[in-house]
Structures are given as C-alpha cells and as structure tokens.
Figure 1 (cartoon, rainbow, N blue to C red):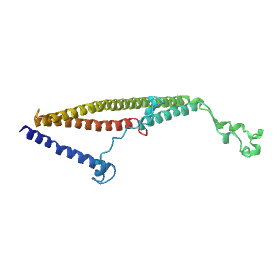
Figure 2 (tube, rainbow, N blue to C red; figure 1 turned 120 degrees about the horizontal axis):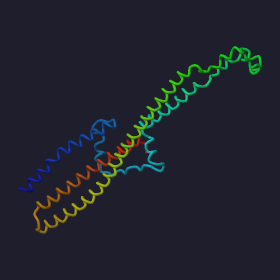
Figure 3 (tube, rainbow, N blue to C red; figure 1 turned 30 degrees about the horizontal axis):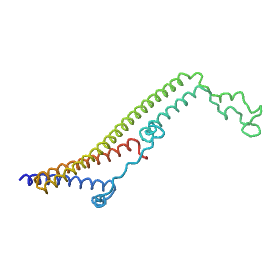
Length: 246
C-alpha cells in the first residue's frame, strides 16, 4: 500500500514539469524567431554544460562598468555639459570678425596686410561683450548648473551600475557554491540508494526503503537542476549588468 501511494504521489509531479518544459521550449523558439517546436529536438538533446566566459579585470573593477549603455550616456552628457561651460566662458573674450575689421581692398591676397587695408571705422568688427557681462555671467552659471546636474546624474548612474554588478556577481558566486554542495549531496544520495538496493536484494530491508532513497535522490537532482538553471540566469544577469561584450 505504501509503495502504491508513493508511486502515485510521484506521478502527480510529472504533468506540471512537462507543462513547464514545453512552455520554456516554445518561449525559446519565439525568442529565436521560429515557430514553437522548431528547436525542441535540438534543445532536448543532452549536452555538456557550457562554461561561462571569463571576464577580464586587468584594468581594474571600475573599467568593468564602461560598457554599460546608461553609464556611457551619462558620461557623454557630462562631457557635453562641461564643453558648454567653456563655450559660455569664452563669451568674456572679444570676438574678431575678419571681414568687418579689414577693408574691402584687403580681400585681395596682395593687399591683405598693407597699411591701407585696415580701416579705423571697421574696428567695430571687434566684438567684446564688455557691457554684457551680466548676461554672460548668467549663461556661465546656467552652464555650470547643467554641469552639476549632469554630474549628479552620472554619479547616480555609476552607483546604480555598481549595485547591479555587485548583486549579479554575489548571486552568481553563491549559486556556484550551492551547485558544488548539491553535487556532493547527489553523490551521497546515489551511494545511499545503491546501498539500499543491495540491502533489499539481501532481504535486509523492504522495497519501501529503496523507493524512499529513490525519492531523496530525485529531490536532490531536481534541486541541482533548478540551481543550475538559476546559475545560468545569474551569468546572463552578470554580463547584462556589465554591458555585455566580454
């Protein structure tokens, strides 16, 4: 009776697992731009686990964030705002209009630097915002304010990127450790299952003890598979947090 009950209990767990399997296979097909079921046979073929590519950290941890699109965008905005400060500050200096400062006759190459080429009245071509410094001050202050805002945005982007990377790496690291521990656990359950079967054949234990060891081994393997899937997702999340391209 106990054996039949345990068998029925185990069979009940199969349909939900099959549903999840088919759903994930169809999702992968759609992500690859194919009809559901296209790659089912290929994906169900047992293969060795793909190793996670190594991340080069020779230039330091800070450079790991330079590939992120949000960090790149914030850095470009900061650089542009810094350039605008230079443009606004340049308004303090005089502007020289060559065509206005030089007389019409000077436009010919032979007379460009002759004394007659310079017209005293054309000194208006030298534009100096001497009496417009209030507006220039306002433009410089506005540019500096925009720069401060861009700097704050850049700092926030870097902090968010650091958080994403830290979370992704710690998750990946801990799942790797959990996977190693589960490998040891699965091996231990496999040995226990083998010992129980030998004892059953020798008449020392009943079939129920063997099935119980089977159940424990199956549960450990299920958990190992789930952790393996979580580990793969964590690897993807890590590369995404780093901006990819490694």
